[in-house]
Length: 112
Image 1 (cartoon, rainbow, N blue to C red):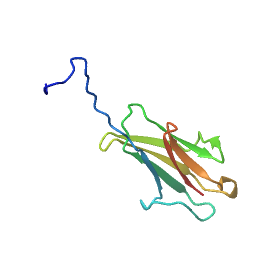
Image 2 (image 1 turned 30 degrees about the horizontal axis):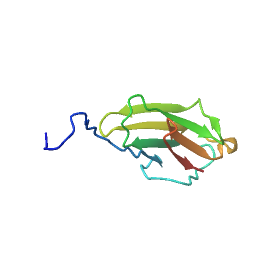
Image 3 (image 1 turned 60 degrees about the vertical axis):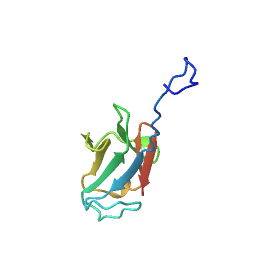
Image 4 (image 1 turned 90 degrees about the horizontal axis):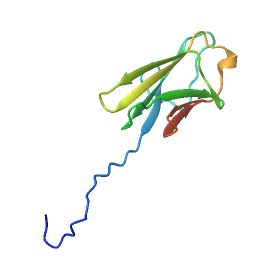
């Protein structure tokens, strides 16, 4: 203990976490706008890194509504990251819109 340090002093370690969320296409390229052919299968993968909270999860949203069908989840402990893939089989015109993936309301990424 350094000299002149009061007896009731406590030290704490602060770790500031800045999660990063990106969306990738089937070629593993980061995308903001995605265009594909009518009837094709579309796969968009949301990757969230720099996470430090146990139980973090990803949800997909389309035009502000929760997407519940066609979502696959894969977790990775490697680099404090998780992934979720949105799969649209035989994409149709009505699938068009803005898709957003969110991590526990901490961070998000969108693609149109």
